[in-house]
Length: 65
Image (cartoon, rainbow, N blue to C red; front, side, top):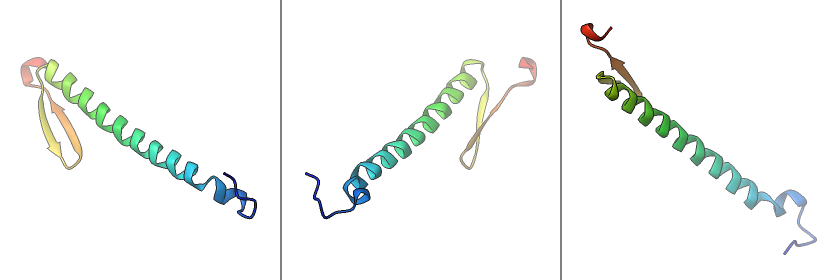
């Protein structure tokens, strides 16, 4: 399907865009998975969660330190 009159970069631009989109989706999914694991770990040890913007902090009670 390569057209001889198109430059090589134009033949592969669709693949490059697809790879860039997949990388971005993979990064975002990994970020949310990490956040979920951190929340589960905090809850498992009895901590309380506080959200500050996009950051979630785990606070331990005085008796658990």
